[in-house]
Image (cartoon, rainbow, N blue to C red; front, top):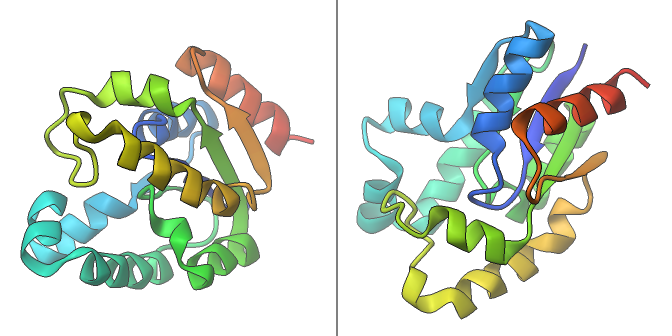
Length: 165
């Protein structure tokens, strides 16, 4: 099986769903953000503050192209879709799964999470604008799953239904 690339906005459930899908399908899962942290020996928030978002996006593209493209689940950072080269890379080498979640539900879900450099709960407007800007890129995915208020089990079952077609 080709790789399954899980995309979506921050807080949409990519990492959690990826782990659950990994158990269900007996496939290993790799998280691009975790790979970047291992490669740079820095946490994502520090990369953003010390090197900037552009440098982080460069790391993201580099890591993506080093990952296996068969029999793996790849969970991606929310902004990986901003670069056309990344979207094309994923589409050519696997199935891209977009986990959609209502942005206001996401904002509630991650309100206390200080590890997300692009989220400040006092500036919800810019959060929504970033979501809307990326939406067109996410929509290029092969499969779109609405995760809003669904259980992890239901989401995994829905994905399994799509990939066994």
